[in-house]
Image (cartoon, rainbow, N blue to C red; front, side, top):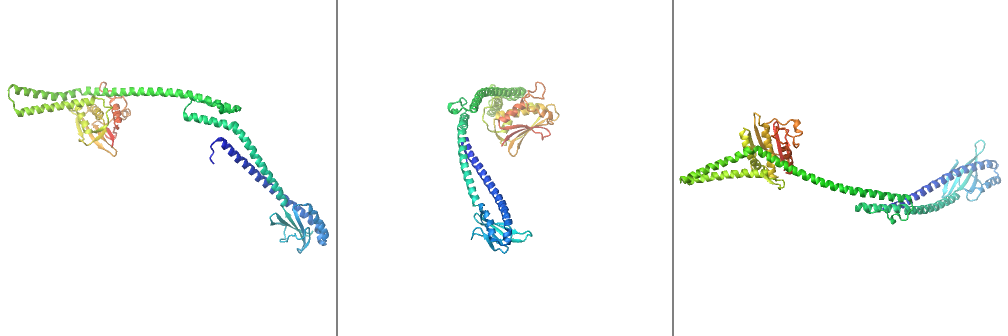
Length: 491
């Protein structure tokens, strides 16, 4: 059964408990009465039968029926004995207290036999001093008096049970009105406050106490009100702390983003500084070619030697050189701009690498560092911000150059890879790998093993964060015997 409240639960359980106690008490009482009566009647009939047998033995020997009748008349005081009969050794009825009621003899041993409903007969052998059977005494026993007594006990128990239930119900109603109702009201008020999250409500109200004078309930209500006050104060403090924390987190996040952008830009500027000579060389070459073409045009004009084929060729050379310079400028603009707010778009990694090579090609060739690109156009297309991935590639190419600059064997390879759920590129140099003690701090900000003035220690840290912002990963590949970094994207 579903119990919806404390008062209902107490009343129901009280009813069950009282009824169970009364029922168990009745069963125990009736069992005790039955067992006691059984022991009593068995012992009493056995003793009475023995006394009658001894007194009737001489009359049975001389077949004195009058004496037998006189002895049997002494049993009239026994309410349980309906009739008593004497039989001789040949089972012939000698005398009986009531004619026509004598029981038949079916056994030669003392025993009880149930006849009907409340009637039993008891057979008792009458023996002489030599243990010779002289006859038998048969008693017809009725337990009707006991059943009447038992019925009275049962009636009294039922009346007692009803009174007990009524009294306990009365006590429980009083207890409910004085204790349970205020506690229930307190619970309802607390539940209302908890669900509404309105800790400004008060639970000390007249209807809550209901005129109750029990100090314990009053103390309980006051303690709940005190606890509610503490919750109010704690809630206000928590709200203030949360607000302060949110402001602090927002401030620190903004500061971190600003510092990160500054670091990225600083890294770009540092990279540009390191590559300025190469960039200048890449721009100066086409400019020199344009100057030569311009001089040829001036000469042709001065000498009035206008040759259409030469003019077309010089014009085409100038256009090619201008396009080359424009490509370099676009690469510089793409490299230096803040692309953090750009959307992720499908990008060909081959184009990213080609745009990046502009900044390192002169530096590599000048110092005899072999650069091998093993990736084709359209082979690797990923969702990313091309300007940011270009910065990662450039940083890794510069690091590779710095690591092997003094080596005898100097080469750098860019390879593609495709795995089950990932694609990307490897950037490998001819170095012998990175020691374990350095690997543990490899991606820490401002940690560098380069000479003073050659590195800031923020390149790999920034590159790793850039890759994460582009849904990718930058990892060091321990499986390669040389120094290899892995730029990977999820398919």
